[in-house]
Image (cartoon, rainbow, N blue to C red; front, side):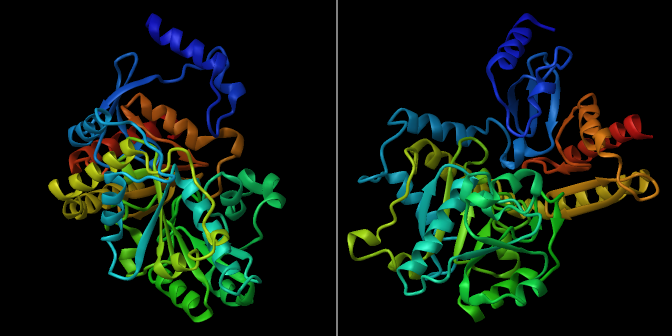
Length: 428
């Protein structure tokens, strides 16, 4: 190990606290974390000079690859002007331009207003507060409940955590947030009294943290109809699915659904800077006009950060210049074929689940039962994959594979070959 690698690891173990991490194990003397130092395209390098395919897009954020020259140039250009200005009482050119671009993905007189924030949790938090305040100011103060779907995940801030359906993350905080009920299916939702419901929240097309589980085709459109019939707002959490992941710019476009609130983050800046946006309708916006107390008193210091806006506008420009969406069908088909071959080669793969360039590979014992939790099988396979040049993470024993959209079909094949080798070496 190089001296600088050792120094960085020692400093990290002494002072850093990582997300979703068992810190006692992380800081154990025999634990050697990877120190990632740079990247290009879908590839990353660590401080020891080892090269890896970024198989989960750096926690589902990276779109066009690392160090993309167009995005980097846009950030540098803006940095020469100003890194940040307040959006409270002021505006700046890039925020206005980005809002126009985002609204332009939807038909006129639908999603017309954009509220900028910092990350996926705050995008959802913003939608929840808007939805409740809208009801209070529209003569429906009794609509105070939210409905979310079991095993869903919408972020970790307290309001967003109220929606979470995964007990190990959220049960300890359940009594401290919004009033929220959970359903598993649309049929269960239809059995509820809608008179007290402010909004329904869902990850469209596929649930992410629930081991990458797609919804049935047509379910989203049916949910939109259910909400319309009962005057319930629909909040779509497209933090993971937005910006091409499912094959269209936004997952809701696959079923021609327009929500009342659309929450975006992760890929908004191409995976370069933290930034989020909550889009909503003019009907919602109008309820906040008038007397001063009707204003939306909510915000963040770095709302509409100019560097983030520059990166987001550049990322959208890359979509056009590189015809990113037009190239996706070939890659999606190659991934589908590769996953099918991978499953056929390994009895321990119970199921592969795919939506666009999002995939979950679920590992089970040959008799179909789950591996004992203490084995942490998914984690072991992902660690083994590093030796074959692939970085990704599991959700329990489901291996997530979500490559940057810039990955070529051959690079996708190569990454799946690395996963094949890891499963062969660690489980068979």
